[in-house]
Length: 92
Length: 476
Image (cartoon, rainbow over all chains, first blue to last red; front, side, top):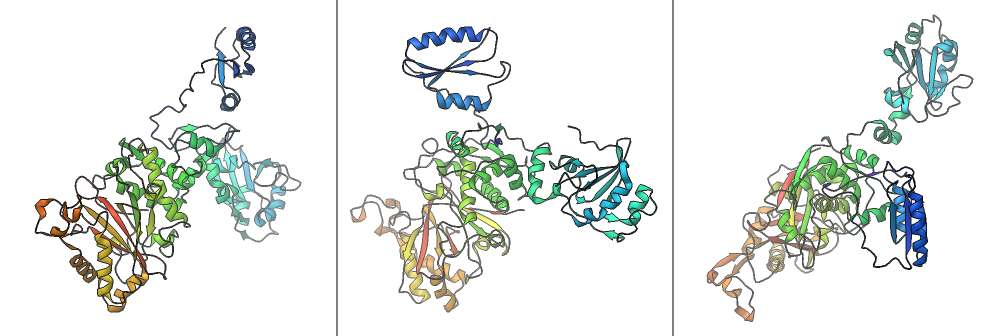
């Protein structure tokens, strides 16, 4: 992990950045499927992958180490740089 | 991880220390009752069991400043400590009568690696239980720090230095002020800023720690009601804060007051003004296109700071005009435009030079306006030499210059000469001073020893709706 930096701002804005624009369609896009490691999330994501394949989307699968903690910053960065959209399976 | 030392005798040593080498036979003689921590080479001392402290964690937590240090621990508490080699002290400490008799009686030790400047900042950040309160922001391993800082909107357009905890701790060593001290309330959002936040932005700007007191004083200066940073930021008029540094600190931190004084190439000149602008941007929220509505902006919005050439000047420095004793470190903030050249390669007398400078100064901001805008004259050494040679005092120069800067209002009334802009009709028949007679024209001596070019920096609007220059003493 590279060392953290200290926030130079007044910290009134949330640290996370604003959400990206929503795509009109998933056709032809690279879509990340994020399994948060909660039971049976994979069943849901498997079915989504089938549907997305039907839309001609490229699917990339990711898994969080544990559902109880935020996704590691490296994983978030990986998804952000590799995908046009991401779908997260939240629960069992 | 516990940093408790075991009961008995404990020694801290490193291979790169002749005194530690010297006491190896002594440590061997003391035997199993001493626990040895080694700082640089886990195989040292040869032939003796030692605990690897190359992380320096045990050394740092137990305040080891010198090696060898011998400590006695009883029931978990330290009951004695010897620094360096001392035959009688080690003998009485260990109870071994003839310990080290073959060695010299005394030998001072060497510096502990845990206080070595190369490691101290990192260790303080790693182990110190940070005193810094700013939110930590993690970047991904593969994320480029420079790009990530751009993405977060912290940059003025130029690359930033990543404000890691180690760098900010090092920056804070430049001031005696506590990190949580409030420096100012920063416009436009009127948020209190601490020394720590100023230090973070100073790191990003590329400042060295010794510049920090200047940055702090400059932030204080612009965040005053008189200076009116909010107005300066919000105005469409393309002006920015300009900082002039006086006093011995100029040379101590290596500021430029000679050739290319208003240009590039000197770290202090280039980064101090930038740090202030980053504070205004990041703490105060002063963003171009948002609160900052400047029509053209100016290079001062990136950072504009320089020092006066005091030793080469025929006169006392600007700080004295501003009410401080000569030799006091000060920074003067002035809200101004970009510098403009005053060309005069022919005037050889102070009278001719003064008349010439006045012609240039009359055109400041607009030749058709008076009293609304002040100015700073950066007098170059060759122009200044005219006054030096003739023995003119600064007061005499200012009086003569003011006389040349009296304007006949009738020649610049609105509509005269077919020009709509001008002074209001109400001034018809009046003689008007170009600048506020009460310090509206500031004179600074700076620049290269060759070149017959002074610089004129016109000011933003003066008076209650605009800005007045503010000078602050630079405190350590």
